[in-house]
Length: 79
Image (cartoon, rainbow, N blue to C red):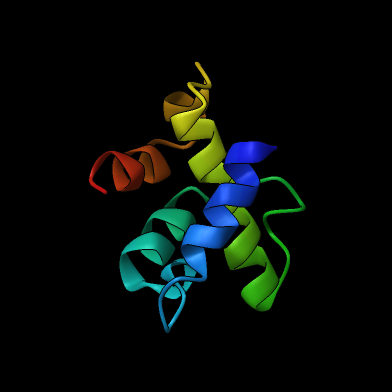
């Protein structure tokens, strides 16, 4: 939860938000079939939640993250 909320804070530090970047959205779209319904919300909410959730999975060491979300894993590894 802490990593998720911290990622929301990071996301809000730029205009436009980091979750709106082409690089993030390319990765998100490539892994879209594996996103949770919460992360798949339409519009900005889905972008923001998938940004925060994917950051939490990556930095929290989720052992399945890179298998289920390989493109988002590559995105976070490059940041």
